[in-house]
Length: 265
Length: 306
Image (tube, rainbow over all chains, first blue to last red; front, side, top):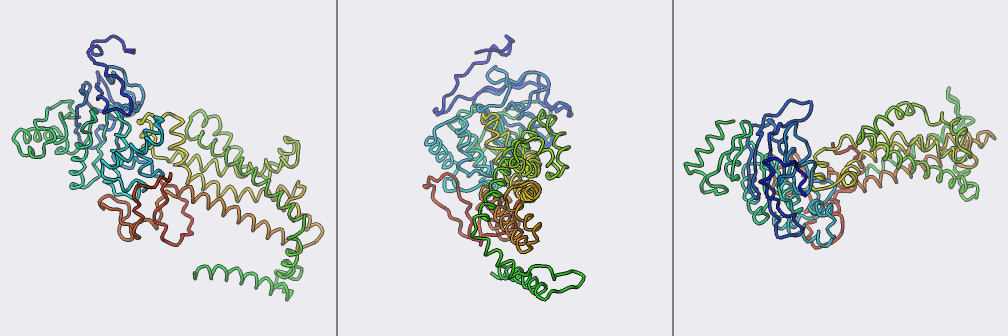
């Protein structure tokens, strides 16, 4: 099972049991960067955190100005892009290629436009060869959870931007991933829709146990959603005093954190 | 309604003019005195329609174009996809394609004669060669233009190469592929007729040329009318099929009447017609495009998505 070289940091990783779909919610994955240099070969390096450990089930937000390479971090974690140096691991095992364990939610237009909403949500299950009837049932459930059950047969372009992002959430979670990597998923939405989507996200993540890495350039969003906030430029990691508590928005501790994050940008 | 009238009128006026010029034996630099009249052509057509020979010619030409075009479609899509997706294929096939592409398919007649044992196969070969390149090039462009996000989405769901090919590349490239097929069917007709004229036994092109050599001018025009009708029929079939399989493309009829369509912000997709907000009970596989309310727009909406 363990094919990693016996290095110190791999030893402490607790290998979670492989989840079987459909489970009551697979355990979240531990994601870690070890001495990583991010970037695409040939392009300019991306300054980013070199070392980071994200605990199973944790929701970590990553903040940084637009265009600083936050997407590169997510693509590296997803396994779409190998790091230039260092190791990226999931539960201590190096991440070599993308896989269903780590779902990626894109900023926009990642739904396949030729598939109906339902067929999009079923896609990760179809890839996993889940029988059709079961797929249908799971897709219906997820669409109900994101409030789009009556739009199941529509095409993505017939929905609004916010609705499309809800479908993307449903699609990402339908596959039962152990980690969800979110790339400014609400970045293109207006403020009102965005707050609603944040609440929905918190709501539907409940019970999945999935680890979440949420990239955003919106400081309020980062401070509200995260258990911890990673400042992308410096790699600093800050604890959030009241994770996902809207009422704590104006608490002094929250305000202090917000100021600190803002200062770092 | 009015437009249909104009279209019919345009045809009728052209035929009327033809009849007038030829029946009066007009010679105004252009010489219409030897030209068959519409009535002569029509009666020749009527005579020929029921004959066994005519049916045989039709059958031969149609079979040649069907085989040649289908071969070209399969090969073109496969090669175009390979060239666009794999560096190896691009290096191996790319230069070949670029060198062979400018050669008119009809200039390949000697090649066909040298290579292939029968005349019949030669004609199919030329037809296929003609349709191949439009399909190949359109497919290559369409595949290259696909948004990488779709592929990455499928990869991060655990999909492999085959899954990406079936679920992303081919469906996403279909609008472009059908652009190539539409061009390809037209070129295929040009070449099947030319090849039949050069080396055919039977076939509409062969018959047309035969009629010319025996100075049966009405017969020549019957041949031309037949080719026109067949070409129109087949390209309509390709277009219709294309429109059906790319029904997911956003159509003007789907859009919100005023303001920029498809932008985030509107919480409901307020279609012009009360969209069939079907309850999710139906188990039909694919969703029909909802706003079929507008009278089937017959504009060629062939642009690929991006």
